[in-house]
Image (cartoon, rainbow, N blue to C red; front, side):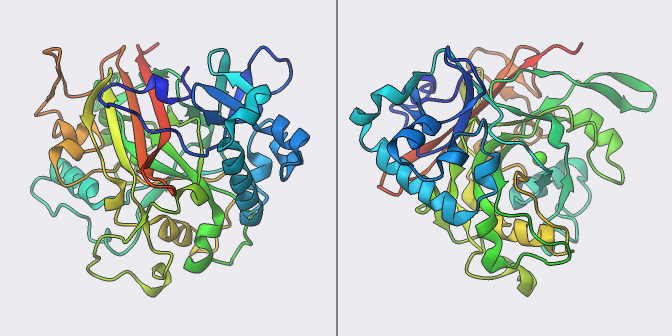
Length: 400
Ligand code: CA
């Protein structure tokens, strides 16, 4: 499995940007004991827990845990201390040699315990394209779409770390028809990792507090079986067409590391209700790249997302439902205005009718067994230039 260090990720780009200050969890490294919290550093990983314990870093009791759960529960002041300290450490690599573990030999594991997983549908281009494909004679957008951030509760227990193979799901594909999915797809999404103390039941999180509950960002691939999804989703939405696997990147990039990536959201008409407005209503300028077997097939722009992370957090709690540290919110498929910016094969192949031509002469409407999909992203770095958010990768295994 790959942690997404720059050396593993050079297909189609000249010089890959460095992975920014980020946190992940690995097992192995020839050392016994539980998994440990690490940070990316070139072709190695930094043992953050050991460094904090011996060099007087902040919150060594949290950074020495086997995953990020404790840190996620500690809240923004602790996150800011940790990220600031870690950035300073990474800027002085000569002092870190005793704390580096070679990437080869460590195995990334899920960096935090996923509490609840909610997947939204926050991109207008994706929602409209999906509407045109599924309801060609109707309005592209459902009447509620520009008023309410639409989403559904997903399956937290099948969120897996990048590199985990995905077994082609089987299920009902139509009336009297069952078997392996013939329309396995990806969805390139931004995942928002929530933390801070659990919120109180009955008390919505207002927009001006919403980002205090967002620790950071992962890249997310919402694997989707379109045939199973289409048959089962009427009227309650996705169930087995999505629940078999959702992949996230090994690295969680803290929001504090993305301070230069905030952008104004797209124009809204009509204006959202007042509870969804405020200075925190901003998007993140992430440029994503989707590769199929190493070949670049799409570059979705996350800055185009109609609903912003603060709006998703605020809306999710607007009925009084509390948050939990470890909640994972998916943005929904990110798609841009142009064909080469569409974030899933449903759109890239227009429902399968226009298969995507590949460099080797083959084409894809949807994924074949053996295919490997890698989603990467870059963002403006605080120090100028761009930083990488790592990658989320998975390959398709045949149905059992
Ligand atoms: Ca999705």
